[in-house]
Length: 113
Length: 115
Image 1 (cartoon, helix red, strand yellow):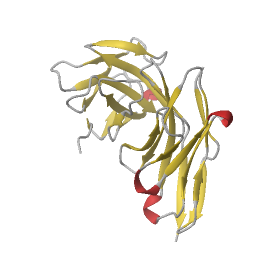
Image 2 (cartoon, rainbow over the protein chains, first blue to last red):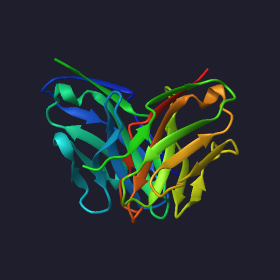
Image 3 (spheres, chains in turn blue, purple):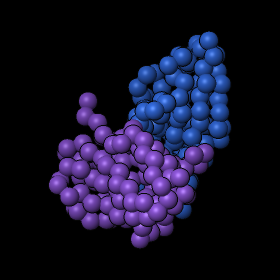
């Protein structure tokens, strides 16, 4: 069975400090992994994806994530938070040959001035 | 950049009424999905659609739900007789020719409120 666990429902950081949003997954197959961001009243925007190529994936807006198979993790990081990063972030997994996506419960990121 | 468009952004309906949620996917996409997120809960898969038929559906997607793509552009989700528990944000999504290793493009969602 597939599942995605986002370990923190809320994360609060100060502007200019690093961001770490944690995600662990379980999958019976070789997964593809994604991070999406949702700003208020907006759709889900893709930040980055892992699809069995490089384990360190760079995305938009300075975000990156590292796929660690031994830890079944795909944590999202950013060296320096910006106020505009305040949003909800979803870790998502999809499997080979299955045309559906499994969502984590989301992490709300708050960025303090 | 191409985007998925959903209408309306917010729909309020009375329990027992039918609602149709509309989506215009990206034009060259082939696989389409509906997801929903009840307030405070995870985003849940409802149904996937390919080649004018349902390819997979979840246990949530019972006989009250239906999907169609009547004119090759709009992709609709119909709920025949809404219940209070159908209140949620509904997201439409699409992917291209390769569902493996391909991200889904999501619309901005329709917030359905059943009263």
